Length: 345
Image: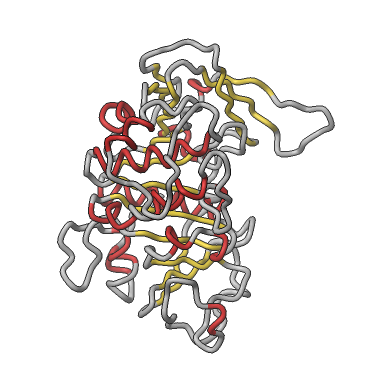
């Protein structure tokens, strides 16, 4: 993968400001960890772009890249498997199946040893153990959430992040949807650190924090609000957020409104001044006057803020093995220490 060139940009307040982090940016740059929301339809290349961003974060900032993984889904991080540190909650053993691209009826794929595919598999005890011991600076950390939510309730009770307009008390339990773990993890990172360059990459973010989330028995809406109100502290503590989804309006406004950088993918019309209804919520205006992206091919996107815009491109990143990888967590697995995989960087 080619080296990221900071001098290749026309505007210093776009690519250089987004990717080259600084603690003191003055009036011209973002101080701390920026936020970026990528919007595009399925198949537009969002996941490949996020992988490219991960490589830039590691190279420029020696950031701890945290790739949010979901058990049983397609592993979009597979192109980075030879350098991936797969982080799994202690007490669970990951099992993996390689599913061919051309599916046949009844095919379940082939079971493979995950340690033969990735750089290493590591285990964490709770959210604090993950942050303080397991995550590594300058490395690609694929994190699977803990269904038992270990450490999340303690972090919440030790914090002062109480939702002001609610009498309900937030709780993290093993009965919660497993993706609620990310609310507890995000809070632990803000409250307890370490406060160093960290890049949180969350694809399909609308499934985690949808705009129309219900205040169900798991208090999903309150947890979304709790973490959304912490987004400014994410920036101050050096935590960059790279979120991606299908449409701007699908992401909860408390998460979306605190993001100043946007990326619009190819294949659909970008926001324009002449169409005020297309301007993302949280932005007062956009600098584009024409449709620049409807006819663009995969591998091209538009990075913009309220004041500047520029087209960006990125290379295709091939997978080291063919097919899709599905990873599942077996609750009856071993409780292990770090085990090194058979593929090295």
